[in-house]
Image (cartoon, rainbow, N blue to C red; front, side, top):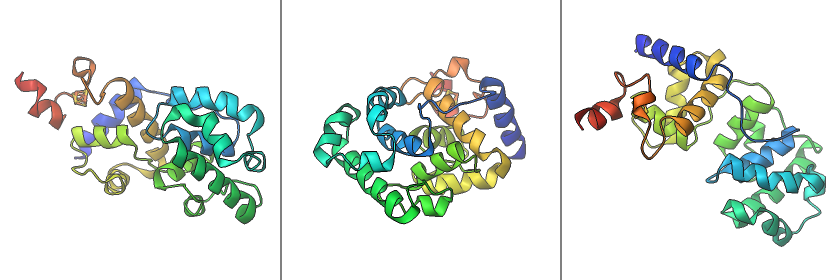
Length: 212
Ligand code: SF4
């Protein structure tokens, strides 16, 4: 397995030497809102929404001046807008009431915020606070399974397994590289296997494409 891990690290570094989060934000709070909006939506769509939203409502205090219905109207196009609006307002209330208006820098505390799950907390922790965490989204889960790093549909088990396989100092970058790899090469439908350096180790490729 060590050889495979080295191979994966090397090739991901070649493909995505400086991976960056594709959500636009200028504060920890904005990132938190953007990550909530981007769930089951695209970063592109989330960026379109936040470009308008953050002009007026870029702090928890300002966000709380909106009613649920008003926020729903602004974020309508990102899907699941009802839950997302509710979560953004509850999370903002928690930040104001429990954390003095500041997004907590601690991974456990981030997860205490209403509407903030493990994946969202991990993204904010690694991206905004440069902590080492592996946020498992749909791309990371799919790619990890295809490459044979994990064999699970459970994001939490996937996260824990990846944390054992890769050095902690690399977790934040690895998360971004796997997201980019899943978004642009190992796509859910029609992965670009002909452009992929992992055909020899990829379980999915061996089981499907190889025999076509
Ligand atoms: S060979 Fe194809 S399925 Fe396997 S990791 Fe590469 S792109 Fe994904």
